[in-house]
Image (cartoon, rainbow, N blue to C red; front, side):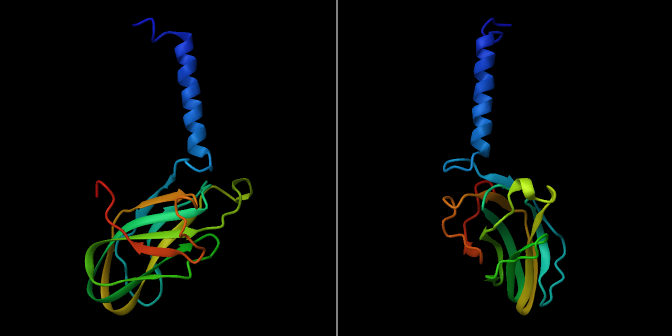
Length: 175
């Protein structure tokens, strides 16, 4: 093995670099990285006029003020489907919804300025937000695919509100 790889100073430099990268990932200041959140879509939306969960986003340990979700939805049949985000632990939901008509592979972005309790006062690390859907008009069928969920800063998502904001987006790279 090379003597350079066994150098104590090189090991210290790598350790310092790792410490600085870890600090950057957790630093809530401008320029810090987004916090990826796990998203799990549910199979078999039953339809109906009441909101029902179609995906779950784990937000335990989230330190960013905005929950951003980019997801793909396909609506078939006739009519429209409305979406909202719902915090299953606090019972709060976005007061704004987005209606989606018939179409395949439509990408939607939701941004919710979510006022979370400080991490040290939370009653546990498992918290979740549900993407919910309901039949608005007609008899639509719905399929929701895996999306990208993350916690972001208000600098990254300046249009996010506590009511929730929705927009059509293009598919992320690789989808």
